[in-house]
Length: 227
Image 1 (spheres, one colour):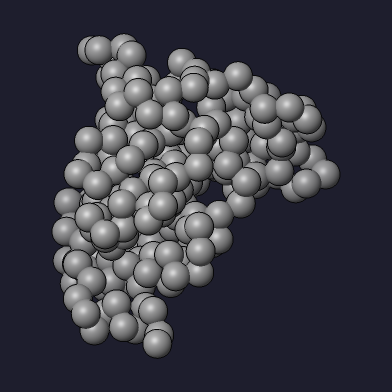
Image 2: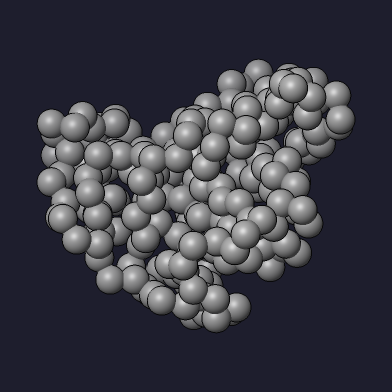
């Protein structure tokens, strides 16, 4: 019964009343990106935008994005729950409500958001609800948190396009990706930042559906961002 109870807690979002209390101060994290040596905490440069993506294991997810042309910096952390300044261990209980996410700061003139989101949808299975493969729990749910309404609108359009692509490929599952304006982002501990660069040879895998995600054309962008 204990194991069943723990499983159910991991698969069900807590409420603000039942979530762990957390703490008033941020936990310690890294100052600099291991690869680029850029600050993880500084404000983005002018002309750069931020998107937050949850697609399962955030070690593998961060590695997927940090070398893309146009990326300024990446960081991993927690978002979308109730517990302030949570630790990794707290998030893994399922009692904070947070998803494990990657913060991506990118040059919007060099790397369109829809290109980032194409990679996002292709790199994981966004139809699995509160899990990704063997990683089970609310912390592994598929999420997109946009810094502004324009980002949210583009993400919703991309989600709809990917749902259509899945149906065309004979996949009847529903895309469960949650898309909202970004809530507060909490950095994970230092050892999680760029974990696969710090620990060469460590294993972390993402698995997609094998169905390509369509690219937004000018007409799609117009529908996603009304003038």
